[in-house]
Amino acid sequence: MRAVVQRVSAASVTVGGEIIGEIEVGMLVLVGVGHDDTALDAETLAKKVAGLRIFSREGRMDLSV
Image 1: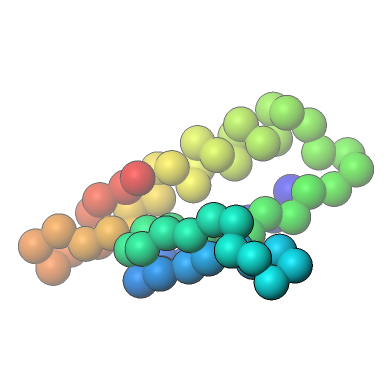
Image 2 (image 1 turned 90 degrees about the vertical axis):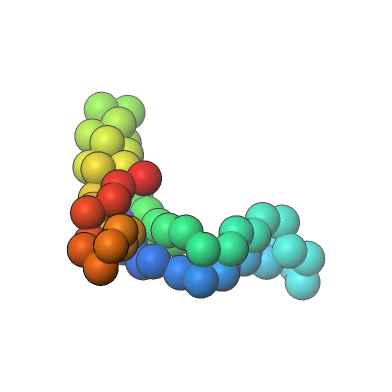
């Protein structure tokens, strides 16, 4: 299982020309799942991503989700 994490000012998901989800400032996570990945792998990755300190406070990147 792999993930690409990106801070965004806005993001949306479009399917068939229709926006089905959108956010303003936040985190975009693209996840690749393989045949051998398990629910435990997903839980571990979710905890890791949630703990990333990629949002700034007082000029320091020290806030997590």
